[in-house]
Structures are given as structure tokens and as C-alpha cells.
Image (tube, rainbow, N blue to C red; front, side, top):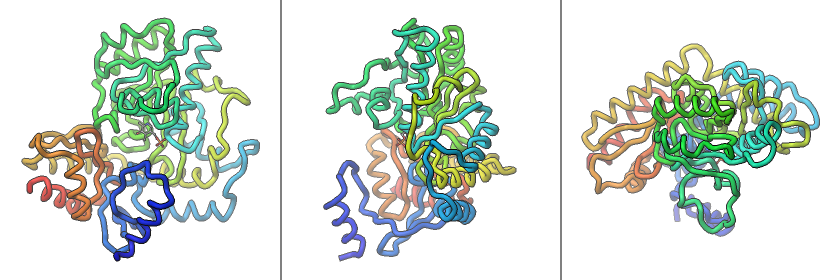
Length: 394
Ligand SMILES: *Cc1c(COP(=O)(O)O)cnc(C)c1O
């Protein structure tokens, strides 16, 4: 019996089986490469769904996190810590926001945004203006509110009743959205590039219309940048590509380099909405997560880092587009969707084949999805792309 089988069996005996897992028991990782319990190596083009944005166990990041573990690992939010203040200041200064609430995940960041949007409207207009418009094919998380917000019917099973107050509009359909923006609506929530929904970027025209129509009606725009944020698309926030700054922006996934953290950023208009006692999270803004977050942000904002992300993104995209088996690529920066030319080939089969050859990739709907570490090197890209091309051209 292979060593990893023992782990896999024990795992399946005791951990709830709510995921379809690959038969890989990860032991350790360095850079973009991880090793399983049988000492087989894998190149990771998924970076733990974008969380390990500096790859596995980056030295500077690990030093910062370990130092914090030995200094102060946690305190309740009834007290102050310098490290949370420092991370909040950096995050606000770099993103141009005025204030932040810290949680521990993307769903939690979005819950915070949803509550804040409803309270903003309640404070100003009273009851009845509570609806939030989300887009078809969106993904906002797995908690009850964020599932209710998610605009994909496949998620709306079993857990009835879902939370009221979410209305879906079609992405890139201005007329549909406009028809739904009535006086019951307090916010529109969007992903600039839908991640789980298939790596689809919103059009500039639609995004312009959303922001214009919302501004005219004092409806808030919430940008869910849980997947697109923190340099993933080649800008710190994907909204920068569109020339847009939402009233509320949420971050998670890569924000602390692989430590659980979510952040909800507020502009001048929304910063004061959540007052003492209206929201909280025991672990939110945890010092260890903040140390990881500072290490990530310092790196991502260092001279030349984001322009390299963009160069690498173009490099990967041209390599893929030159491959006959690829019809097209989608997304922005290092958030890459791949549509296969041969309609009979499916993305999840391709992901399984890549796995057998030592390459980890993700899927999103009918596309292969790549979210490689932001600091991946050209040699590592070449190695991964070669495996991918080989299996796609088979
Ligand atoms: C992953 C994701 C979420 C949910 O984040 P969790 O940390 O799993 O709660 C929400 N929104 C988007 C856009 C995501 O990609």
C-alpha cells in the first residue's frame, strides 16, 4: 500500500466527504511545487485556489508569520494590536479605501458587505430598500446569505428556505439590470471577472453602466474581489482595469498568502455604517493573519512586481493560444480560463490527466482554470505549460 493511502483512508473515515478530492496527500511544498507522501512532485497551477499567491512557504512570508506566532498569536477584538492597525493602514493606502473590517474568509467578507449595504440603506431611507442585485453565474460563498446571493441555480438546493432579498440580473445586459434597479434595491454586487462561474470578465460598457446607474440612485456597488484581488489580475484590485472603485470591496483568498483572512473595504460613504455592536468576528484581524497579509502586500506592491505578473500572464496566454487544442483564453492577468477547441474534450477530464502527469490545475464550468502563484518563474511556467500542452494535444 502506498504511504498516502493510509492518510486518504483515515481522512475519508473521519472527515465529512463534502468535496470530490484528488487522491493526493500533500506533505510539503516549496515555491510552486509540492510533494505528496509518496515523494511524488507536483507543479501547482492552482495555488490552493489562489490563496498561496507567493507559492508554498515563501521564506520572507514564513519568517514574518513565524515571528508573529512567537510574539502574540491572538487577542480579542476588544483590544488593539499594532499589527492589525499596520495592515489596515497599508491595505487602505494601497487600495484607496477609508476603512476595513477583517474576517476569516471570502464568505465572511461578503456577509459583512451585505449587512453593511442593508444598514446603509436602512439608516438613510428606512425599511423596504433591502434588495441586492447579483449577477447570473456569480459565486459569493457557501454561507446561507452568500449562497442566497450566488446567482447559480445549482447551489440553490437542499437548504431551503434561502435568505430573501437577492435578485439576479444578467451579466453584461444593461437593459436587464436597469429594469431591476427599482426603489427596493440597496446594492449591486459583482465580480469583475467571475471566477467559479467560468472565468468571464465583465465588459467595460456594462461596468460603466452599473456604476453610473447606481450612482444616480444612491445604490451601492459591492465588488467581490475575493478571487480577483491582491494582484491576481495584474493590478492590486481588478477594478483598476475598469477605472472603477466600488463603495465596498471584499478580499480574501490570496490576501494573507495562505492563512485564513477576509477583508471588507469601505469608502468614505460606507465607512461609518457598521457601528459598535453591529458586526463582529472572533478571529477577524488575527495577528498571525495580519503578519501574513503585510508580507503579501509588501511583496505585491514592491517595484516591478505587478508588471511582472502582467508579463507572465501575456507569456502564458500566448503559449496557450499557440496550442491547437486551445480555442481561446479568458479572464484577466494570472486568472486564466481555457476553452478547449475540441468540444468532445472536457475540462475536468483534462484536469485529471494533468494531475496524473504531475500538474495541478482547476476548472470552472467548462473551462480549465489556472491561478498560478503570482511569483512563478518563466522556467516553472514552461514546465507546466509543456505538460498541459502534451495532455491537450493527445
Ligand atoms: C472563493 C470565493 C468566495 C468564497 O470564499 P471562501 O473563502 O471560500 O468563503 C467568494 N467570492 C468569490 C468571488 C470567490 O472566488
